[in-house]
Length: 258
Image (cartoon, rainbow, N blue to C red; front, side, top):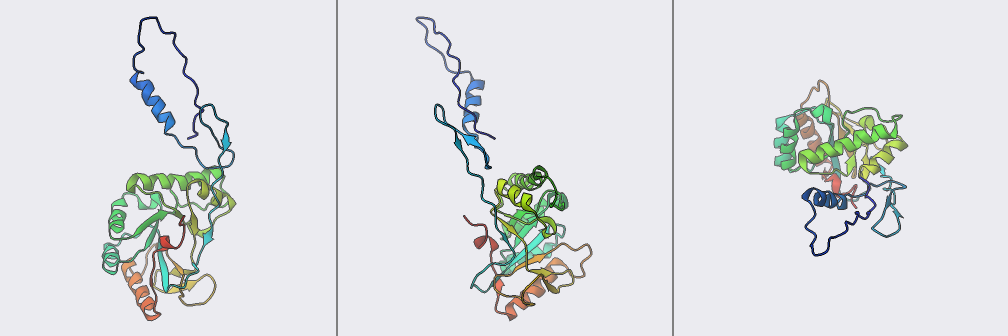
């Protein structure tokens, strides 16, 4: 909401010998609400105080796009997409191993399953943005992309009281409008991946070495009919991490921080 220009209220002529009473309740509430609105980010927005000159509000910075984190810490980052798979044993695994996994959630895919992710969040998972409806974003108008990203921001805020700072575009595809929309929705980083944990438990790589290394972001997509459950695939991956002297890191500690 754009901050309103503070305008003067019409002054009533006071009758002699009378004392003006308090403002009507509705008017007082209106003034309080107007004073509490914040201007959105974006180029060309103006804000001003009563009697002062209007000043331009700087646009939100375009978020970086990351698929690997440069770090010397022996960590990789586990990220899970969509929210279609709701394996109760995965909650137990996250709790027992204290895994700081990141869940990129799509509202239309989750449907009535938000309770599952509330339980995951309670045991240490982090919830992030993956759009409302999982469309391919490139080529869509800026307003449509903003509706997808900001809409899911509002959903997650309403459900969990959080405003995610990380966003994963569906299918890993984005264009300049995606980045601009993400910035306007409060996103600090667009997260892709270098490694995919496939439904059968095998790892594939988009580029670089064909093995896990420090700083890798691993995507775990939702499979239509995976041969292994989410808990089973994750357990296999943890075994390989142990063999390589790696552990699961918290992505939010490395990406999207102010």
